[in-house]
Structures are given as C-alpha cells and as structure tokens.
Length: 322
Ligand code: SF4
Figure 1 (cartoon, rainbow, N blue to C red):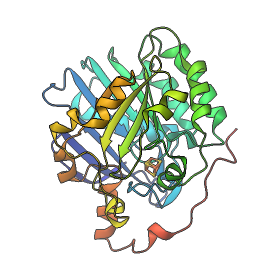
Figure 2: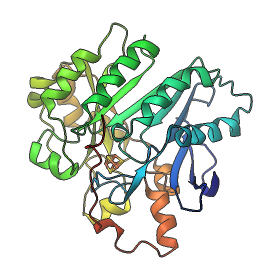
Figure 3: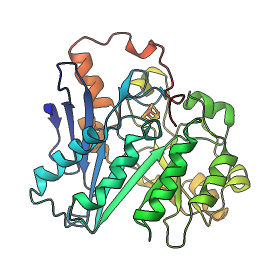
Figure 4: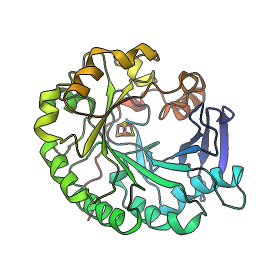
C-alpha cells in the first residue's frame, strides 16, 4: 500500500489517501483515524476504512459517490486497518475502551461480501477488548443475503452490544429519500422487519441516521409507524460541506452549533420516545477535508484528471451478490 497523502495529526482526525495497487492499476482508497475530544485515545479510538473503490450510489451530499471502480478484497480492507493500528500500536494490542472500526468511509458496505470476511477476522486479529465494529448502510435492495449473514455473524461473534448497526435514511419523505439516496433501496417496513431478526438481548439500539438537509422532513409519526423506540435511536448529523453537497446547493439543517441540541426537532423526537443523538461532528474535520470522499476528490482535482466524473453513469452492483 502506498500512502499518497495525509492530513491532520489524529487529534481529532488524520485522513489518509492510499493506492492499494499491486499491478500498476490504481486502486485509491481513503481511510481515517480519529478521537472524540475530550476523550483521550485510550478511551475511544475510531477508525474508518473504505470498502469499495468509490461508490455507485451517488448520494448528492457525498464525495465518495458518482464514480465507482469495484469492490475491495477483505485483505485490502484489513490492510487499511493494519496500517492505522501499526502506526499507533505496533504490538497490535489496542488499549482503547472503545475501539470502533467503521466500515463506511468510502462505499456502501452491503455491496461488498468481503466486508463479512473482515468481520469474521477482526476478533482474532487484534488484542482489543474494546473492539466495536460499526456498519453504516443505506439498506440497498438486492443485498438481503448480505444482511441475513450479517445478522447471523453478529449473533455468533459480537453479542452483548459489541456491534453497531446504522441505517442512513436522511428523511421520512420517500420521494426525497429516493433523491438523496439514488439507488434501489429497501423500504422502512423491511428495515423494521430486519430489526426484529437482528435483535438479541444486550444489543445496542440500531441507529437511524439523518444527515439533515435544511429542507428534509423528519416526521416523528412516520418513524413511530415503523421504528420502535425500544429498537432504534435517532442520530442527527450536519450535512457536511462536501464538493457535491455544495454543487447540489444542499444546505445543512444543523450547524456546528451546540444550540442545535435544544432545537425543535430533537425535542419532538424525544417527546415521541426516541433516544436522540445530535452529533455535531468536528468542524476541524471540515477544515482538513476528512468528510467522506473529500480528500480523494481534492487529490483527483489537483491532478486535474476528474472534470466530469460526477456525471458518469454507474451500475449498481447488487445483481451478482448471492
Ligand atoms: S453516502 Fe454512502 S452510499 Fe451514499 S455515495 Fe456516499 S458512501 Fe455511497
């Protein structure tokens, strides 16, 4: 793996751009390590690694989308994790009480069955009592076999709240959801049924994530129709200032402003019975360009190789998944 660029010092975040090529054909990935001040690294250390080369979904707020060049192998995903671990803990003994590995950085993970192999391998690979894999997905249709195996794997290897699952849905308006996540998706009823299959006692609540645009409706009554507060929590995040979000004129509902905690929407969701996390993120991440796909895009733009890549049609790779 060749590191092409890096930014930040790990406090709060350090983002890497790397080429995984072994045969001269470029395979660019982005991965990140971060902490969550004021917690020290020994308390919580978060890694985010790529699972695809780009992403075929093409969400208008995400710089990972719009160009897609295939899946990473399990070894290629693990290589990113190893690099970050070895740079801090060469003995591969990770003391963090919460050692979160997010399979989400570039790419929709459910499109890649190798992600399941990575999840099988992680517990034996590091001495990490705080290991907490986290998978964030838009629930693409055609990946139901992936999700069934994921649930089985979690029950086998990650019981007692040692796995975090997140569905990014962004709005309760189905038409707008189609625009914000322009790929075939499972509907809310499917996600609710999956949660029933998923849950065993001691599990973490499943996160419903909303990267909230200023004009994105979130109706507590629609959520309550499908998502029981005993199984789901709500996470509201700002719409990050990616290149694509700017080019689509998307504005964030939340800003990096602590007052957002008291805003009407979090209050209404709490009144409906949900646990609500308003995750304002680190504005330093915006400054170093560590929002998903942004670092890669900056690199590509600098090389002046990507001028119209965003408009290139891409195929959704669900069909050949077993
Ligand atoms: S937000 Fe996720 S699914 Fe959408 S384009 Fe980015 S990586 Fe893909």
